[in-house]
Amino acid sequence: MSEETLQIEVRVEGYVPNAMQEDYKDGFASFDATRVDILAPIEFRGRQLMIFHDTPPSPGTPWRRPGARLRARIERASLTGTDTLFAGALSAVQEVPPESR
Picture (tube, rainbow, N blue to C red):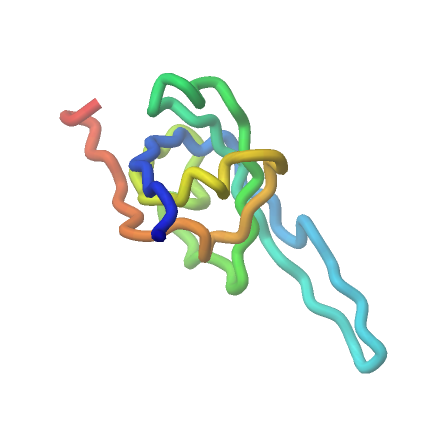
């Protein structure tokens, strides 16, 4: 049985370089993050998420631009419990053009 997939729309609130660091015996890994507010679906509206990136998004991308709106697909189960996710939990990510808001 497959998980229920939702389309969410979020607004970027901020970008945090080096938001998380993992230490290993032979070094460390650092992850940038994007803070977002969920705008849709209505049942999740107002919820905030911290989305960590395996590789830093390029400068100028919507992930780094406060006020940018994004639509993406996500499994409903990913929105239960924690408010932190890795960007890999999202698929079909697209910027919402201003005229579509």
